[in-house]
Length: 82
Image (cartoon, rainbow, N blue to C red; front, side, top):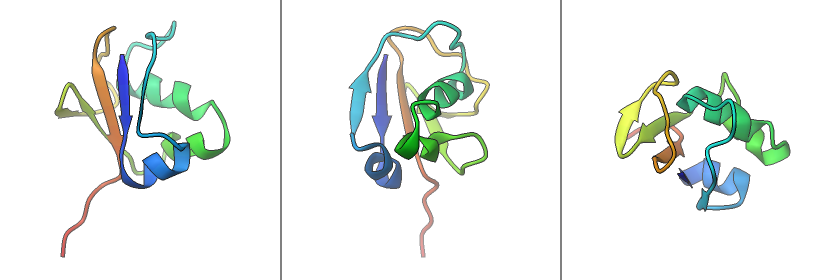
């Protein structure tokens, strides 16, 4: 699975992307967020309750979207224009 981080999330976690095996017990985008947030400090930017959007294989999804090995998941803050 490839995980991408954009904008302020990229700065918080200190990387733009990573490859990881689908962790045991991770079945949804929300599960993946919780798994990553549990890494500690900067990763708390992904914690539940934080305003984070997700895309699964380049399609916007909610926290209940199922993930599988080989998927691409991108996390990013909401974007505003003006």
